[in-house]
Image (cartoon, rainbow, N blue to C red; front, side):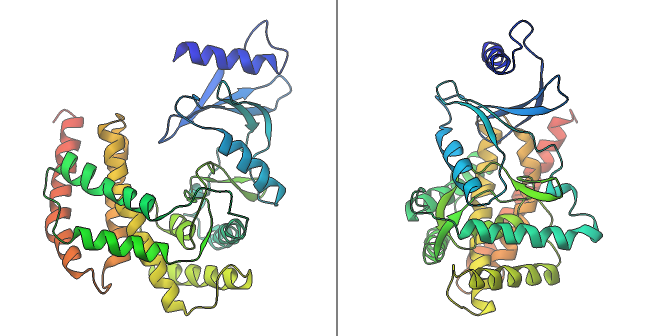
Length: 338
């Protein structure tokens, strides 16, 4: 990895006349993929973000194409300054480190920021989506398969419940039946940056043509404790009204839309339970295990009281959750050498 980092430094230096003394790069973050991000400080006092996306691991052409298209349609995404797809290097606008997530704990700012995030989400849903990959039944099902494969079998070593095939089928059918629109697919509070008094969207390279409510679910029910029901109901209804006004969905009742949101929550959260176990076991990123309890609560939000899911939820609460809690305790004890 040192050779690749040196290559990135030389590449950045070549665009700023710094070949004699290639600059040091500040690590910003890595993510759940093979991408890494660095900050380049320039003598002018400005800075840039450098994306390192090994081309044998990541196809960055979608990031570049979507960034340019969405920016042309008025979505606030970072400007691209230099692109080298052969090497997998991109230099882009530095939006800082101020994520939406850091502001949502403040009562005085939360409502205005959530309104802006909801408006941005609806604007993305209204974008042309025909050129994007289809988030189809096969893809949705493969994501759900991560739950039994990695969470139940590989990490917890417990049997897959008999109700699972029916749950899988129902969720795939429910999401596929929704209006299919442009979906960011990771529209959560860590991918929305507060910069120049507005929200900016990052990490959009996975955009797809998919279920109407997916980005709203990503915003409301991700790496956070469940919001109070009164807040959720208000924000969900706000999204429904804005989407109808924008013409991206036919008029439906608040109750029907809420069921869309809840079933999408279940699919996404079960997928994440499996995905985070895979990141811990296969990719040696155990920090993701600490987030599993949040998505347990989101599964409950989505499926508790839903007709047709009673047997699964009984197993979920009486078998799965106790086993997961015990395994997490065991993991924490081992991590601290106890």
